[in-house]
Each structure stands twice: as structure tokens, then as C-alpha cells.
Amino acid sequence: GQNIDQPTEMTATEGAIVQINCTYQTSGFNGLFWYQQHAGEAPTFLSYNVLDGLEEKGRFSSFLSRSKGYSYLLLKELQMKDSASYLCAVRDQYGGATNKLIFGTGTLLAVQP
Amino acid sequence: ETGVTQTPRHLVMGMTNKKSLKCEQHLGHNAMYWYKQSAKKPLELMFVYNFKEQTENNSVPSRFSPECPNSSHLFLHLHTLQPEDSALYLCASSQGGSTGELFFGEGSRLTVL
Image 1: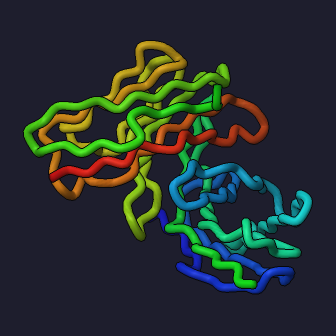
Image 2: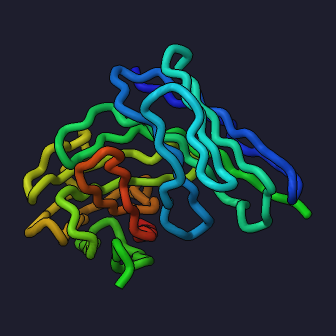
């Protein structure tokens, strides 16, 4: 079956670093995505990993280990505006222009002063 | 114009009503998607269209009927829905490429009475 696990909620302090973990078991794998979703807004793309290792993009980094079925999203120098839900998604197959993404339930991050 | 626009943003309907959700993308993408987002559940893929052709129907009940007249527009026709269909319906688009990430609209919040 298809399964993606991530913590339901996390709390962190402004200025700190937080790591959001995601583990997956899927029938296929063709990349892992992280999305950010503020309440009442559209999910927005944060990062993409298809090979093992760390991808860094400003304050956000994402790591992938395919052999372990594991990824994490690292947020540095947390700001209040980072309070949002963070969605982990695995691309099950990639056919031309279409993507079949399987999502986790999301991790609701609360950044406190 | 924002990338992916959905209307209406909010919809309340009775179980015997017929209504439609509309999605329009201004990104020149070839693929469009409908996802369902319910509280504390992962995003569920409903339908995928590539160049106006349906490529995925994820066992969605027939009371949901998609329509894709061209690569820029996607509709979801709703008929005799159930209260458990109340959710946020998200439209997304994507283009083939090395990442192929999805671009989401802000969603249509549906309440079925």
C-alpha cells in the first residue's frame, strides 16, 4: 500500500531551527516534494528531491534517503510567518506532463515568539 | 492574473442541488488536477487531465463529474452530494520538466447540508 507519515503538529521558537520528518512506503518513487500551506491558502512548492542528499534553498533545506524511505525539511532562523502546514508528497509515477503525487497528512508548525 | 484561479471560493449546497466548481490556469501548463482536502486527512487525488484527456480517475464516485474543455480550464460538476463530501477542493496544474511541481489554486470550500 501507499503510506506517508509525518508528525501531526510541532511547535518551535522564533529564530530557532526545526526539522520536520517524513517517512514513506510507496509502490513507486519518482521524487519527493515539500509544500507549505498557510491556513485558507493554496499549497506552495518548497523543495524537490529525487537523488539522495541535501538540497538547500535559502532558509529551507530538504534531505532524502531513498534506501531508508526518509526525508526531512529543515527550517532555519524561524520567523512567525513560517507558521503553516508542511506537506510531504511522493511522486508515484511520472508520465509526460502529469504527476501522481501521494501526500501525507501534513505537519502543522506553530512558531512562537 | 494569479497562476491558478478557482471559483467559487465558498459553496454551500443541499444534497439534491447541482453545482459546478471552476478552475482556470494562466501558466500554459498541459496537465490539470482535482484534489480533495479534508480535515486531518491527506490530500486525495481525484482526477488528472493531460492535454484535455482524462488520464486518472482515482475511484471517485459518479456524483463528481469532471470536464476539461481545454488545457486551461477544468470543471468539477457536483450532483446529489453527501454531507461527507464537504471539504476543500483544490485544483492544480503542472508542466513536464525536471521537477514538474504542481501549482495549486486556493481551493473551493464546499459544505453539503
